[in-house]
Amino acid sequence: MHQRAIDTIQQNLETEARLKMEAVVVRKRLEQDITELEITLDGVNKARAEAEKNLKQCQQEVGDLETLLEEEQKTKLVCYLRSKYKIRTFLLRSFNLFLLSY
Image 1 (cartoon, rainbow, N blue to C red):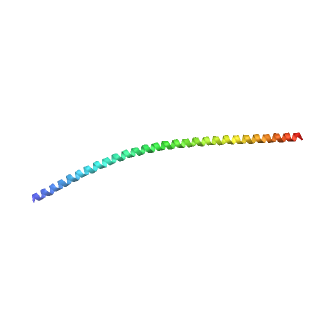
Image 2 (spheres, rainbow, N blue to C red; image 1 turned 90 degrees about the horizontal axis):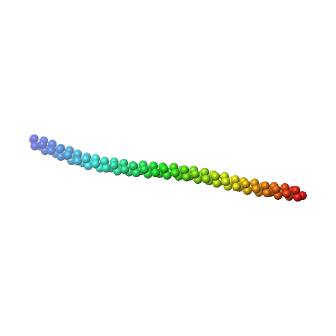
Image 3 (cartoon, one colour; image 1 turned 90 degrees about the vertical axis):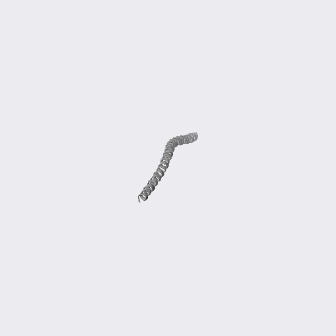
């Protein structure tokens, strides 16, 4: 009877030791997974920061281009209005000269 109890205790100890070893292996795998995930997360965060930096740069460039476009449109409008003014002035002078010639 004592031998049977000793055998049961021995089996329990072996099972416990095996489970502890398996737990250590699983723990090490999980620690490795965590390390890999932290490295991946760091890379993703760096990529996100770079993307945000690029986005801000692009937004600034778009704003600059919009400003340039507005300035160009204003310049074209001014040139157009000046040419219309010159044409009207020419036509009015021509008309006045025509009227004066009669």
